Amino acid sequence: MITQYRDLFNVSLFKYIFFSTLLFSTISVLLADPPDWQDNPGEYEFTATISGGIILGENGVQMGECNEISPENGLCLDDIQDLFAA
Image 1: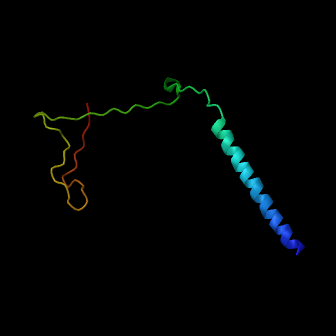
Image 2 (image 1 turned 30 degrees about the vertical axis):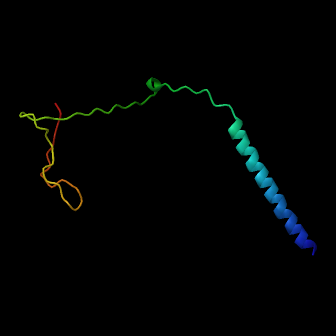
Image 3 (image 1 turned 60 degrees about the vertical axis):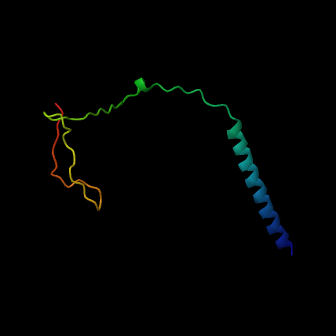
């Protein structure tokens, strides 16, 4: 009979400690001051730039278009053209 009360006490004590810790942690995060960080993208060591463009042929038509699209999967069925921007 004593072991039953001991097990009950340990479970309730564990729940009390667990929920108290959870409550304290949550309140600490919610009431904390926000950090005063500043972001300076120009000072990064490795930066990247992506440039894009549309390549037009001599007749003003966009090169690399797909004239025949597969109805099953939506992929282009035309011959593949390699395009290099000058």
